[in-house]
Image (cartoon, rainbow, N blue to C red; front, side, top):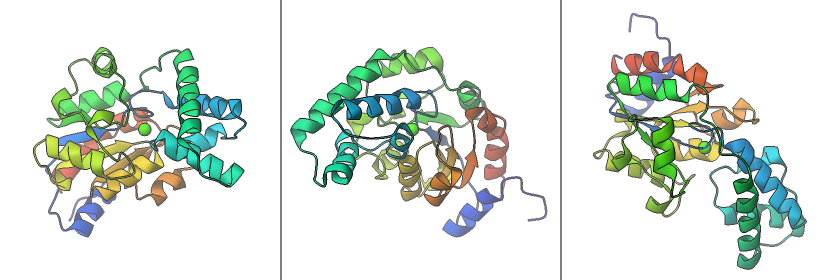
Amino acid sequence: MTHQLTYPQLAAFCQDHNYQRFELRTIMFDMDGVLFNSMPNHARAWHRAMAFYGLDLPEDEAYLHEGRTGFGTINIVTQRQLGRAADHTECDKIYQKKSEFFNEYPTAERMPGAYETVKAVKESGVTPIIVTGSGTVSLLERIEQNFPSLFHHEWMVAARDVKYGKPNPEPYLMGMQKAGQLKPYQTMVVENAPLGVEAGVAAGCFVIAVNTGPLPDSVLLDQGANLLFHSMTELSENIVGIIHEANSL
Ligand code: CA
């Protein structure tokens, strides 16, 4: 390699996995906290619902559990505070209250820089797809309004498609499968949450972390994120360079 690499993490990833270079076909985007700025509402709703039932989950901590099932999150709090597992009835109550509070908030805005990033991916000849644990019925409509004609919806992975969810690699493996049995060197993952990064890494993928919340960068890097940016705007300024360098190693 004679020329200077701007993103040496790409070459390091290929070397670690014995790939010659990337042959990028898709980039898989997580949704909450990446494409939409919905995490502050989720964190606030979690905190309020727990408090309503006498439990304490600080808003900042809610970001650590992003992507976990409702049951999993509630269980962590009851174990810590009450020394016991959560039962299904209380989980249903707390989760329903969380949804009520969440639905009181205005719909989250598109994340600044997200449109520019996805558009640049598509214009580079790489297909952007969404891999999310979210499963609202109006999901497709909302994506189309905010990212018109950019995403390949047939290859989208949502809550209904998966059994385990993140941090299990299943959602990303399923995205790769839907997009045509892709290998890890034919795709990349864009994630904001520690459990999401863990899922992407476990799927064997190069993971770009975008730290759009209050957690320290180390939380995402410790899960194995290969590159880290602090906003989708910063990623939008780098994504074309990343794709070009990845494909021309
Ligand atoms: Ca997320």
